[in-house]
Image (cartoon, rainbow, N blue to C red; front, side):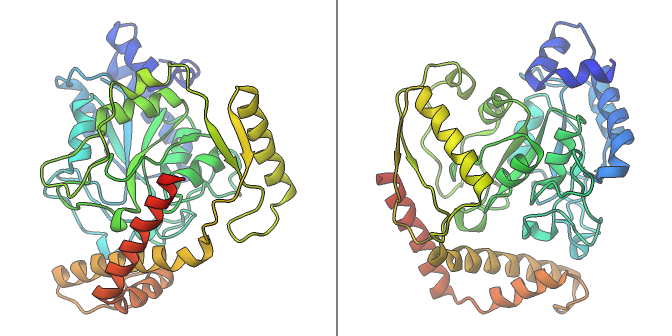
Amino acid sequence: MRFEEYRRHDAISLAALIAKREVSAEEVLETAIARAEQVNPAINAIVHKQYEQARKAVAAELPEGPLKGVPYLIKDLGFFETGEPATFGSSLFKDFVADHQTAYVTRCKKAGLVFMGRSSSPEFGLNPNTEPRLYGSCHNPWNLEYSPGGSSGGSAAAVAAGILPVSHATDGGGSIRIPAAQCGLFGLKPSRGRVSMAPDAGEGWGGLSTGHVVSRSVRDSALMLDCTAGPEPGDPYAAPMHEGSFLEAIARQPRKLRIALMLKDHRGAKLHPECLAAVQNAAKLCANLDHIVEEADPGLDMVALRPMNARISAANTARSCNTRWKALGREPNTEDVEAVTWAVYERGMRVSGVEYIGRSLLCTRRGARWARS
């Protein structure tokens, strides 16, 4: 399969070609591998290759899922696959190999996706850029002097470079949306509890983080939710079940929406002229689509809410580091992690159980307020 043809298709279209035997899964995989080998030395998006494992999976009988034969990358931030490394972008986990499989990975494989590697993430997903000390910087394929964003920068760079049409991503504070914006892709952060993190976690960062994808098409994102959404036994909570299919929903005429338009940033400051123009153009488009657009301010002090996110993420990071140090039989030390991670670790160690519960309750209350508005 020629790359020029491959690049024109999203995941759904590729799966349809494979299902109709117009192209084989082997040809699709080899095209993806060839593209990866061509561009990855420059963009550094794939930090672990699973080409031979992918070839064996394709040679065996793939599940008859809706995305049978489509190449896929898992972000190197948890989400385990048996027998494969999971480094969290950190030297602390450089020798860690998973001995079990995350429910999300199982669901992706059931959908027919072919895992060809793991994509780059900043250490523990803490930064809005992707420059882990362990692997080096990931670069934006549109301009190698630019960042693809973070923390799902490796996935976004791989999709934007045409290695594959859709790739796994996670988001706790913009880690799907930032790379999608910086690489010209579609990025949706699902509601908490929509995609299970079983069996290793009931939630990510106290419910702030969740997993999904970055993609070139909206319909790929919708179908991936159809394939991966839903609770697992033991999950502490789940998002309300969606009636019907997410993929079918994007074809329905949407109801008229009331859309709040904010013309200041979360600090109350004026927007940069280019950002202001982009927001106003988006509002005009929504109004032309017959939605009701009203300038409004929800009255939430986002600056005051920052410590909530910071304390919750720091405490979770500290727990992850301590668990690994204990497994390795060593004391916490600055050599194993980056300077930013060490600062976050120290902050997390100062968060008491009482404070953590208080921050979590504040998060829940603010979410309820947003839901009512």
